[in-house]
Figure 1 (cartoon, rainbow, N blue to C red):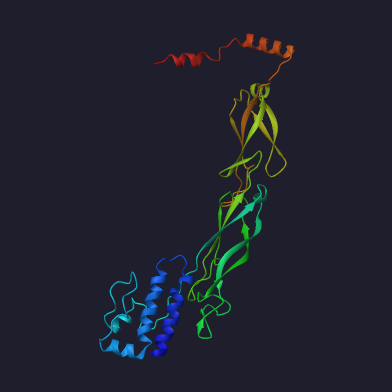
Figure 2 (cartoon, rainbow, N blue to C red; figure 1 turned 30 degrees about the vertical axis):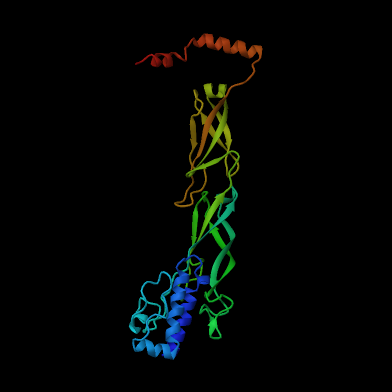
Length: 305
């Protein structure tokens, strides 16, 4: 019985040690509870007194522990630290981890294989995750069964990855506890911005400078593709500033679903800041020929109630 008590105490001391539960504010109180319970069970005289009903909890219960134990059965109750069944702790899944990887704008237009440094908890090699060595808490992991380290992980980023896209790498997260499986790794992409093209959903958008003559009469112009090379784009006559023109399938590859998005050009009509005398004469003649009031409709609507 004493051997079972000693083994249970070591196991629970490792499990509830504050150094192994840095993010759990209650760990220290649970650790005190284990120590107080062990002080009774490990001492033969206190144990006899306890069995005879002469001894309850050894002194005042630790803060937050509630009422002292009333009988030995309570100490071995499944809900309390020591269990007569001496059942091993259940396997616990390791934590999922998230890291970020920086990628160039054009780099994601094709499949990318990236290596990322992942800080994680791995099973302690010194004790094999048992958290004990030579009958005491393992000095390598300080009784936690896991050690903090960094691992290089290779991950495939699919072509067409967007900024903020998550790529899951199963089983490459932190090691599990008590024989549990490791968690997963999530790699979040950070794609650099481009000076001309902007990613919007599955498409690339950009602003296309257009002369006012091209906008008025129409034209066929060549525009650059993000993937390289040029593609022809037809400007209809009467193209207004801000009009969007689409080239199907000339955009980025779709990371999911296959195919390519579109290339969307937004016309920006460029008006010359200076005119020669000849140019002004031509435009004056054009205005006289057209003899139109481009603001007539706006003025009419402004007077409506």
